[in-house]
Length: 309
Image (cartoon, rainbow, N blue to C red; front, side, top):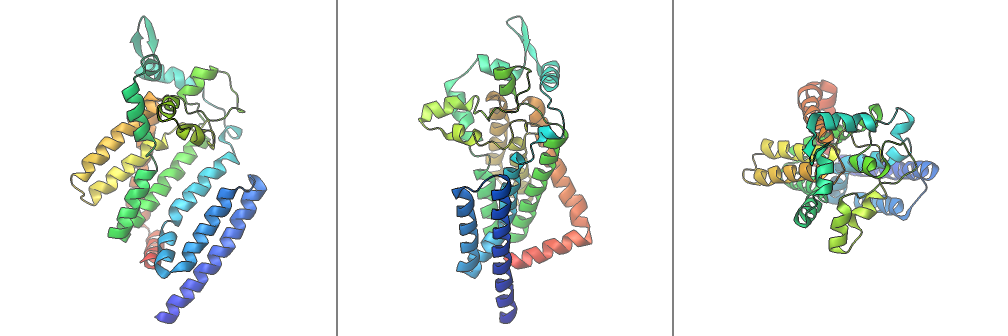
């Protein structure tokens, strides 16, 4: 048994090193190397080498590393090169489905919130939205420490939901509400991301928190579906699966807060939110009812689980 573990450790280190070199080569070729790329590679390999426990931990969280790498590479192959950008169409549909009369004009929920800003809502929305990744990651760590099987299922479902969402980005590139507010219905693929309503949150705290995040946005025209709104659904589903009791009520609040903040801030239409929820439910269904029913995928999950236990 000890010889097998030593061989696995050696193989893992070799694969990690080779994979890291390939990653750096691809990043340098398509994006350009940055300090953060080297930092990620160094940290990943360090955890592979330090102890068996750190190796198991980083191997488990490689699922999230893959998500981060794929998201970063969205900027290499922008979705607007594959399909036309929906700017006016989605705005008109939103106005038709969810618009209402305000001061004699039919406006969208985003436009209403833009005209009726509130300092308390600015701060609350910012606090919810900034945790769109930290909460799922914290929940992942909790599951990893308490139930590695459930952790792996959650992580793989999270990745699957992202893959479905990314496919949606390429099938139907769509502009967010703030784009229409700033640029109208004219297409301009040269613009950078914008913090939109969260700019006010940055002003309140005196830091360019959202500003720095959105200037690095991988693709401005990847608003539909809203993966920000999908993630808390996945967290909620696994909270229920693991019978977390009252903690699940906190997940409900987090989920509703993210949904509201996405519309209030001007980053998503209600349509984006709904399709984000559908994306999460579809990912959960496909993982549980299709993938986990296949022998090949079940075998993969079993072997992956043995690697991180």
